Image (cartoon, rainbow, N blue to C red; front, side, top):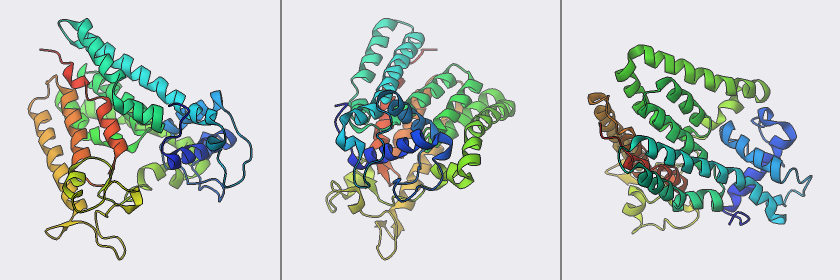
Length: 345
C-alpha cells in the first residue's frame, strides 16, 4: 500500500510542492507557482515540511521531467517517500494514545492502554489516510490530541503552543478555538487567555514571518485566506447530513467537481432549503452546536471530559456544514477512541 498511488491528483500536487521545496527551500515556495510548477502551495508549512523531509531522505530530486510526466508515475519510490514520514507520525499518535490512557484510567490501566492503542493502530481511517492516500491529517490529529491532553492536565500555556503548531499544519484546527478559549478563561481568567494568546501568536509569527519575507505576505497567508470558498459543494463524499439527505436525488458518488453547489455560483443555482442556501443552513446548524458545547464548557469548567467535548465539536463540523471532504472524517475519527479514557474524579 505504501508504494501504491492513492488519489492521483493530490499525489501529483504533493510531488510538485515537495520538488519546489527541495530546489528552492521551504521559505520560498509560497510565491506564485510558475507554469510548469503545478498549483500554488495552499497548505500551511509544517505538513509540507514533513512531506519534503520524506522526499529528501528516501527519494530526492528526480531532476527535470517533461511537463506531462511525474516521478510518482515512473518510480513508486517517490510515492513511498511521501508516505513514510506520515506513517511515522501515525505510530507516534498511537504511542501518545496508549500513554494518555495509561495515565488517566484509575483501574485496569494496562488493559485500557492496550485497548486504546489497538483501536488507534487498527483504525481504518489511519490506514486510508496515510498508507493509501498519503495525506497529512495524521499530523494534524497528533497535535490536536496533544492540545486536548495539555488542556486535560491544566497545562494551558503548553496547550496554546500545541494549538499554534496545529494551525501551522492545517487551518481546520481553528475549530477547537471556542472550547480552548472558554476553558482557559474559566480556569485561569484573563491572564491565562493573554498568556496563551501571546504564546500562540509568537509561535505562528516565528514560522510565518520568514515565509512572508521570502515569498510575500499574500503567499504566507494563502493557506488561511486563499482557500475559503474554493470548493463550493455540499459535500465531497463525506457521509454527513447533506450526503444522506440528498443522495436519493443527486449522484454524490462521482468526481468531486460534479457535486451540487451549496450556494449560488455563477449561473448555477445551489441547493436551497425553503429559499435559504445549504451553506447558510449548514453553518447555522453548526453554530448552534458550537453554542451548546460552549455553554457546557462555561457551566462546568473543571470538567474532565475535554476529549468528549472536542470530539463533539469536530463531529458537528463533519455533519452539518457543506463542503466537507472525506479527509475531514479522517481527522475527526483519528482521535475518537480517546474520550473512552476518562478519569473518574
